[in-house]
Amino acid sequence: MKISVTVNGQTHESDVEPRTLLVQYVREDLGLTGTNIGCDTSSCGACSLHLDGEAVKSCTVLAVQADGSKVTTIEGLATDGKMHPMQEAFMQNHGLQCGFCTPGMVMAAIGLLNENPNPTEDEVRIGLEGNLCRCTGYHNIVQSILACAKGGK
Amino acid sequence: MIPSLFDYKRASSAAEAISLVTEYGEDAKFLAGGHSLLPLMKLRLAAPSVLVDIGRLKDLSYITDAGSYIAIGALTRHMDVETSSIVKQHVPLLACAAGHVGDPQVRHRGTIGGSIAHADSASDLPATTLALGATYVVQGASGIREIAATDFYKGFLESALRPDEMLTEIRVPKMNGAGWSFQKFNRRAQDWAIVGVAAWRGNGGSGVALVNMGSTPVLATDVATALASGASVADSAELAAAQADPQSDLNASAEYRTHLAKVLVRRALEEASK
Image (cartoon, rainbow over all chains, first blue to last red; front, side):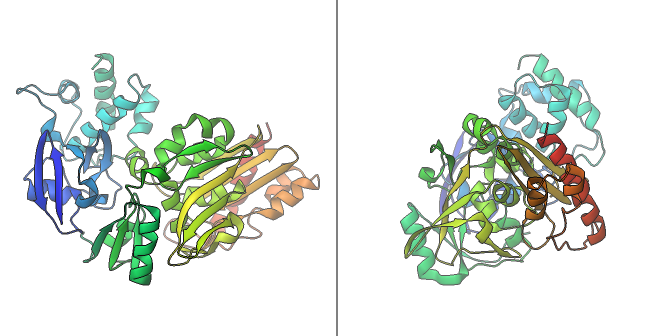
């Protein structure tokens, strides 16, 4: 089926099988492998990206459902070689260990601040309930997001 | 994991969607947010040959005050139910329960109608709307009918919906200031409830329904009857599992679930009685 999806500002006209998952489409058809596949059962959040401005789990969305939509992946965050403030905050606060959950964490975190720009620590922790870090490195992830929120970005 | 092959049809109206499932028969499934159906398809527990995508029927995404009840379009997403000022004001128990479904990413996609039509006893919204005495409006090839939540759940993932029928609206009576509580016991933040309880009490009545205490959501009418006859919260809560038939699984034995139901119903009623 023919679909048209704008990913990171660039519109792609593609022909996909209806059963193609959105995560598979961005990784394999578009070569954007920053979005990871973790559990593949909408539990872990590693595949989180933004669909029309909201964080979703792309392992549980069909590419055909994204037809006509705007998608932002981790690759689309930096502008002119400058990292997004959330990426910068993760770097400054050592908000990652092995890094596997990081793209999904960053996308979920940006979505969280879009909906709640000044969260408490508890609200950050609850807001990240859909993202698992198998290094259990949550402390610095939460600190990164709080730091980004305090930076007003 | 990739689902098995299927044909994809996109409906542009409820009537077209119904006509498509009527044409393709029992092998066709409606696709809304996909957060109940797609995981089943990826695990090959479901393999419909046709998906009829109703996700773009924006006219079925709404929340309106209809006087004695709140009308919620079937395609209203959990996030929109959770944050709606109308729902928070008139049916706060439902807003709270909607905020406990999955996680934020899931609530951006999943819909109240999808959750109810899927009829999973482990889901939060079937039991919550059952406790609140909701009515479901369904549309099929032969017209529109209303089904009381008490008549809707027939068995494991089985509802009173006919193959050609689509759930279009959920009508939830206003709570009129009644006390309420939603209890969800699980081991990890986003998990399904091992046992959950949706309860309200006030204005001379009460309603208690249980999540994941059998093959269907369970309306614990024995508890409400005991409360109405003047029994204490603690004594009424002892009847929590009397009408339930819980399963044993990896998370909990049936005995543990029965114990948990009594504890959670007591907590819920204590909170709802404040």
